[in-house]
Image (tube, rainbow over all chains, first blue to last red; front, side):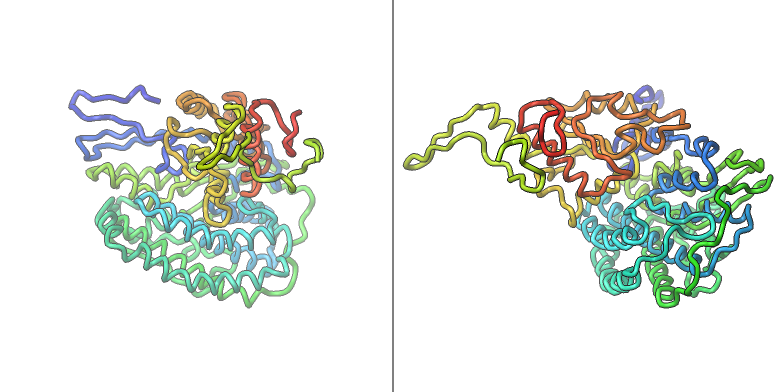
Length: 371
Length: 184
């Protein structure tokens, strides 16, 4: 943990940030080379929360392995489950009923809002504003209550199963979501008032941690991190799954590529997700919530890949099947890992104090990186 | 009502231990010093911000306005172990993290307390089978005072764990107690 700490031959200071550090949002360990206050190099050390989920999934059946993915990117657990369910459905060529598709998209977008809301509170807290944290959790709790009623869990839902969703919607779902929409419409301008227009916040984030479009592409960034640099990469738009193709929504893009742009893209995404929820909540079709599937799923021999857009970017599930009841190999392409690799590039030449702001804007979830 | 009959629901807020004899212009306090110290300790526990995975989000929920553990004296979450009284192990401990956890615990000043939050910190939880990197329970690394079940536990469950820890400190023992505060 401390072997590299000290001073280099060139007189640069090498310090550790993490693994236990409040700004790393988990257990990321950064070895930072500093020249005075200017960051020369950031080297992330991983593995402090490596739970070998990919290896574990090889010994679980096609129904069971999905639960482990809610513990990866726990802030968008619905969307992770969704990606896995899509991959299994692709392998078995299961047709998902339309009601299930709509429920899935509704849950995905509510999760996205919950995740972005938490990021908003946490990022403001990183920069030094504590109040937004409480505002953010007020709205997040509303979504948690909605989730709990239907899925039975607040955080790790395991609601999406191959063929549809596990249970039908709770009778209160419609009313609660309507209530949330009303509340969130009122609160979003408040968010902007608190942070977006704040002079200190702007000074801390504008022109800080710039990531050019070329760099964002070459590091494999995705999600709001890449879209803030002008990369058109929303999976929901490019490769629509479920009912996304029929929906009206925008893909927020920015060109600056700095911390403030990443902030604005996420704020805008919350509005877009809210509009998707508004479009769908009154148009949930009647019918089955789950397709009829066999008790034991046995996909044919072959390789299957599915991709979804989580709150952090592109999440890919790659399944190699040998025709048995358990997958031969599973590989997850997690958005956080690629986004983290661009951190070094974005931070170089900035001040050490800006590191926290830049990391906050990347919205890293460490178990998603380590898996 | 005897000690054995008290249940969680009719537990009263902690009273000041000892007797206060009113005198003109003040009062005289009599009682064992140890009880007074334990009473004071139990009402001002500062947790370390230590979250490795999912349970950390529920810990944040508990700290936020709806559940608000500041009501019970867990007001100030500290980022450095040197200023913290209690570690809430929120999340999985893997082999690489175990020495770091031990080090954090060693850096804390006595008296120090540990809460294992969630299935992973209790036993490895969902990662008990088929993994090569997960420590099967944080109590293999450091001693644990209170265990909270759940994956992740609800904020209410964490609040209950924190209150149980307070009871434990007030009772002056580090023995195992059950959900209603009885010694096991």
